[in-house]
Image (cartoon, one colour):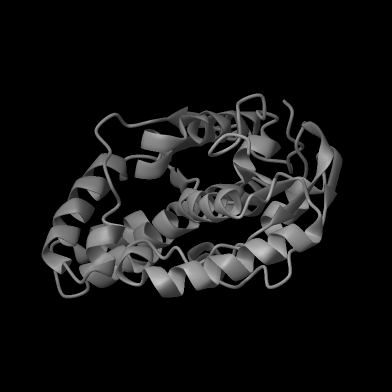
Length: 261
C-alpha cells in the first residue's frame, strides 16, 4: 500500500465516489486519480453509474424546487455506502452543508438528508482526517503553488490537508500563493452574470500565480482551475494547471488542464 496509514481495525470502508459534472465531462483523469488515492488508503471504491449533478447551479440560482428533486435522487443513489467522497470542495459542500437545509421543513426527507450529509467528505480531507493518510507514494521534481478554493476552505475547512500531503511528494517544492484564500472569480454562474468583475478578480489571481515562479498551479476544484487556466493562457503566463489529486496520485503523465501554452 503506497499511502502510510494510522492503525485501523482492519475494516475496509466502502466509499462511493461522487465524480462531479466537470470531472466527468472535462477531466476524467481526476476521477481516476481519486480512485487510486482512495484504494491506496485502504478503501473499496464504488462509482454509482446513475449519479448526476449535485444541484449546485440550481441552488445558487435560487431554484429550490429543482435542487430538491436533484438532491433526492443523489441521496437515494449514495445513502447505502459508508462514505461519499467528492474531489471538489464546492460540490462536497453542497452535499454536506446545503442538503440538510433544503429539507429542514420536510419531515420525510430531513433525517435522510442529515444522515447522508454526515457521510460526505472532500477527497483530500477524507484521506487525511478520516483515513489517517500522512504521506503519498509520488514523485514530481517541480515547483507548485496552491489556490484555496472558496467552498472547500470556508465551508469544509480544507486548507492544511492538501499541503500536508503535497509535502510528502518526493522532489516537490511548494511556493505559497499570495492571497491564496481569495476567490479566483469563477463562482459558477457568477462569472457569467458578472464577467467584468470576474475577469478583474482572476486577473489579479493570475498575477499572483506568476509572482510565485511556480511551474504548476494546483487546487481542489476543477471549476476554479479551468477559470484560472483560461486567464493564464490569455495572459500568456506559462504555468501548468492541474488538480491536486493528479499530483498526489503520481498521475501527471497526461497533459495539464487546457494543454500547454
